[in-house]
Image (cartoon, rainbow, N blue to C red):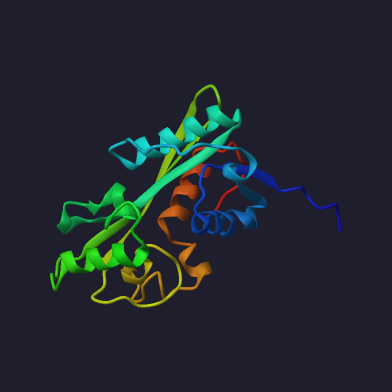
Length: 206
């Protein structure tokens, strides 16, 4: 056997342990490790003042890169329910209030939908990569599906217990991590980022 190759490391501007776990699970097989910029540097809270996922991802990536003097990627993601004018959208993590729990956000979503049959939705993720000098680029991924009539499963996080991806009969909350990570919006955004050369990697997730 030849010598092991040291993993390439990417620095992520997030404190969300669920997102970090998914990044690591998806990129690990490519020998790419992901570390939180917040574990390496003191970074003040970055206010998400954008009106789109892309704007917020760019704000976080550029500010974190400038503060840390490092190359950093950030993401902004959320759920869009088409019959609710694409709510909760960029407010997905704080749909029921700035300090809302996942369960409180879920409860508000399910209350607003009620028994409506128009439950089509999509999860969206936008990644942005920045150096201290400039924005390098962005990549987007999505997965379409529908909102179930009840919460099922305890895996995942956010709205996973009610989101059923197209072509499946189970929610993300019922899926094993390895299955979700092949079709999720976060996985698709990473695939697109790699395919378009955003991370300057000669690798593929396909």
